[in-house]
Length: 69
Image 1 (cartoon, rainbow, N blue to C red):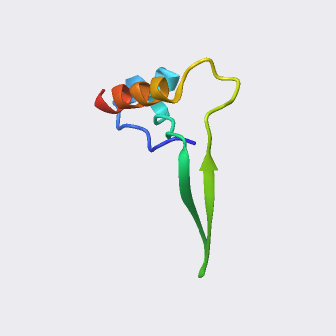
Image 2 (spheres, rainbow, N blue to C red):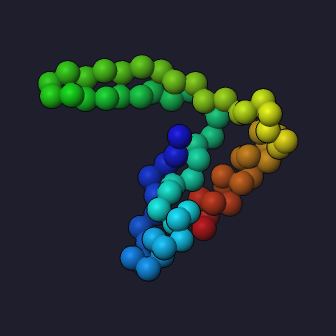
């Protein structure tokens, strides 16, 4: 679950992480899928991996830093 990747020069795509956007923060999101004239929507809850060794605050600080860069 990631945001849109940043626009980077073609040479930067050799760095694999340059073609991926940052991971979304835990929370409730609305997912919308359109096929022809039909539109499907549902709610999706993203949670912090319970095995993670970092806190939600650590994750937020990482997200804020990545968004600044």
